[in-house]
Image (cartoon, rainbow, N blue to C red; front, side, top):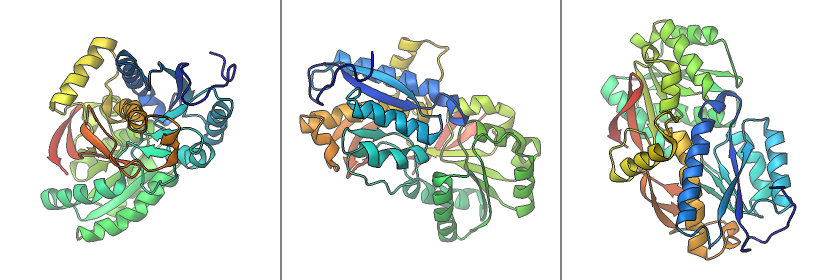
Length: 359
């Protein structure tokens, strides 16, 4: 395809080209392949059912792991040329914040990442988990079950970890605890020795990990290497099975995660999804995980939006209360522009997650 070779309206009978904005480099590149495979499966299943408003869905992959300004310029150009009719994908909040005001009034934009909350730009729809729904119940459970009172925040230095850290201070107090220290590092940090020493010096009972992809992997290895896993828990809202594999079983003890999806979910919807994914891509494919699977949800929501409105153009108008569909996460619906979903707390068991509680 040559982007922009033919200008198309949103409801033209031509194929619907969707910009799939996912990380192919940087620390989040570790789960980029799972994002692409899950999105491909969604597109194939949508097409087998007749497409979106009768149009075949085709994916145009954009590297969301490039510098945010480069990502935004690329996607905006594709939209301006009429080369894509929708934008879907997992990318960091720094990209979303810059991209939303430049494209959301033109085409539907479905953002699939777990994020800090507060996105209300008309035309932006969000499938990911939000901090307000995840953190308080997870922190309460760890306080009650594990006696956690003193938290140390370790995060990358950009909008999602910074905003979440501010919220965590308040949430910790509601759980009769407090945040004793906060450490922020650049994306793609290689050496976590100084960070681990600072966590140890803080006397924290638990670390709230707000690190992306490979950065979380490197921190986990350094943390366990220093022996801190024996006395200090870790809680992440951004940890999937692919990151567990990269971390190694010896470094996952005491690691907890909260998300709307885990590969170990034993629901009928997820068992069916896992079987279809394995049949399509084989046993050697990366596990979908919550991050990759989110892109399946993104394409599914796009199809549901179009079916609900009877047009893609209407989907750029903002809120879409009542839009419903069923996916690997179960029966889902939009409230405003956010997807309502079940959330879970899980504990790492070597290279898998054991779901401990529904939040």
